[in-house]
Image (cartoon, rainbow, N blue to C red; front, side, top):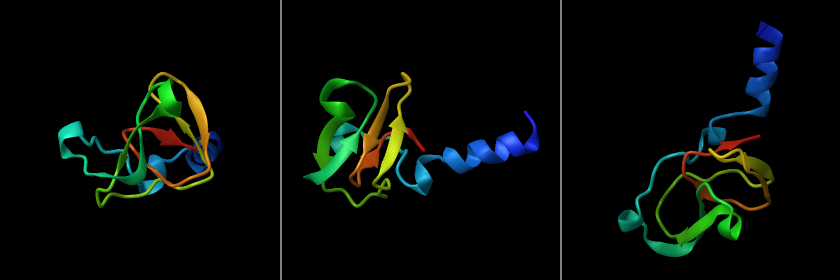
Length: 85
């Protein structure tokens, strides 16, 4: 690809906007109110609600999981290795 296209893609896609994207095993999760988003269709990909001190994923973004499933998120969340745009 050329430089302009590369830059345009970087502007739309970022590695979780600098937030999230780290694996948080079930055993390490503290119950709370923050949605924890993983890949999958069930419950819009929200697998848990956590209280861990973690980086926040920006609200009003679209996530794309490893299966190519895209979802709009109008809330802050923590994510497990998901891309946003």
